[in-house]
Image (cartoon, rainbow, N blue to C red):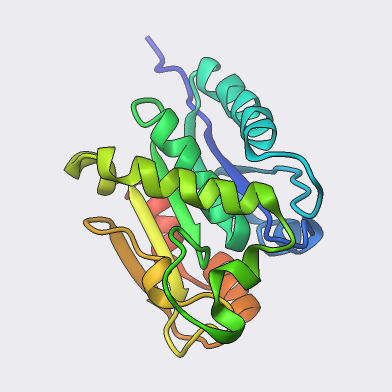
Length: 201
């Protein structure tokens, strides 16, 4: 009897600008090269909509893939990193893995341009999502944490402090790059450990 094929479905969410075309461009060959079926989710951060509304919309999309029997991964770029972690925590038994690419997962205590209140003032939903994960993170088990990958630029990120990206006990990696956007682009396009993680190899 032939074993039923299970899709590797990768949901990717955008940063604060909400731009999806760049993510689509750098992941355009993932299906052909890696057998990874990518869906870039739409999220508008710079509005007055609360986190729960955005969370429920994304979760509904992801639940559809879970119910279809797909192997589901969630990847958050920048502002969407906390969304990926919150969704993973909500469906930790059904989602295969979650990735935070350069996003705040806790406020931290930096001042200046990397201050969390400054970085989050354009989006109440983003701010609420980060604080939600701060409350949820302690419930993650050792096994849960091994299903999380975080990625940050090795040579510095001018917007997001490194200590706010990491998850204790997770797979915490760096890309050989500096700068926020360049780090995200490198992680999605030229970084083998991300593909290895998403293919569970």
